[in-house]
Length: 147
Length: 180
Image 1: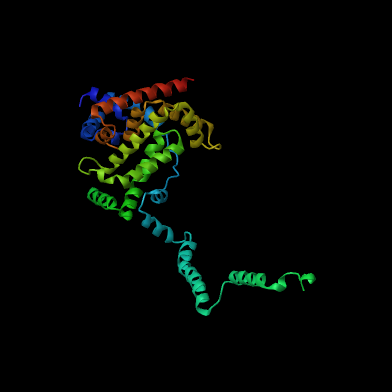
Image 2: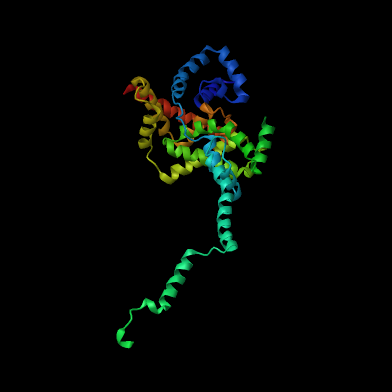
């Protein structure tokens, strides 16, 4: 490797040998070990790499879990994952799903029991009562002159 | 290991969430670092990270393991999303850098250290996006020059020119910052 190429590598990739092109790394290392001039050049480039190492990435709030939850899925999959959450998460969901047949059973049972045992709707009874009262003469004041 | 990853991608494309999760856990930290260094604004960076991995789920069938490594493909998606964002919003970088510095440093930090972080953050965000991306991929992300060239859709020679110009500009900016 010629010194011009060595300098070009430092200009582009910096002083960290691991970042140098893989196919030229060995030759560049050999040149560096054998040349004091190359060592001096490398030192002159090292200040920038030291500064670059100070540029740390900020923390992201994006986690594996948040990505998994936001994945577009078929409706049936979303329903199942909503009903059966992970351990310790929203335990009321499976309880609610489990109690749903019970609630439906009570509603259906209440409506069919009335029909079976002849219970009538109380609202209907009241309407009949008012209708019968309206037909009854005693419901009106008696006029003595007509008698 | 690469064969295993290719198998995981196949399974993930077929809808296997456990395979997808393994890919996600392997690549999320590295991709987050790349995007966080590319973008000045944390919330926007988070959106890009999320979108990159949603695309792995929805468009994983477009990945060809014979032409690139998965990390290269993911970096390419993230890079394009960053560039799209810059074009769309045409942001003034300076405003966002102030936010970046505020987020990167706590009030208890040493003032000298704060100054160093501020100057390198300013300098990095002052670079054109392609120069910044090239330096981030080769200096921090450990991508080879060939992989970084694929991400930027350019040749290795052009990549070297991008990095050399970027580093030269960084040196000038940091030197002038030191003089001030």
